[in-house]
Length: 275
Image (cartoon, rainbow, N blue to C red):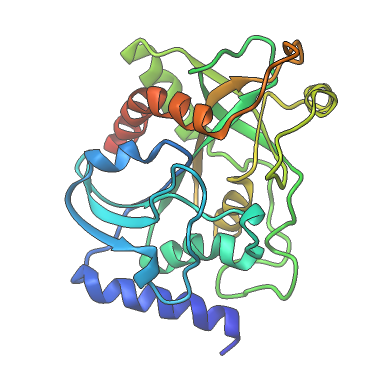
């Protein structure tokens, strides 16, 4: 068996040995400061990444590094409490390994979240943005030999984010009185934050929010024909009119994400309830 496939199935087999035959219906990836949703999962089984064969170690601020299995909104789910990033020095095969493992475990949907800078002038700190499309400035995780077990050589990306799930989120937002933005997410390599000129350029080419993650996982999920729902928490206003003493700070990003996590958790929970 090809080495990459071997790593995927070894990790999946280890996790399956802990699940007693249960199959997660939904996979959830929780980004910086957004691990709070995991607290709402009931009857949990917590597996640290360090115990799972071939998993990387999550080193990013606000990422606890656990795979959590349990009940959320009446469904058996698995949630990644923290993800892996290209900027941590991991290759795309390691960054996206958990998504393929979740595919083998049987998920039917993937929900992704992140903390992002709002380059759209209308966006404010604490806003929630439904990701309707993306612009990828990271290496494509499908470069290399195609894994035929998972999907075709040239997967379609016309609708990377599921339109039905987006419609459900918009309806739930209205029902709960939560204002939701809807826009385009751009991901770069990081780990440095962008310059004011880069913020302006990304706005010019159609980005509403920018970050350093999420898109590789979405590409791999869509390669496997898994419907995806994505949401960004706007944690800083990247509008370009910065004071001379302004500094982008990673701890501030996590605090802003944590403050909005309850609203995002409510949206995710209500959508999952309908599946």
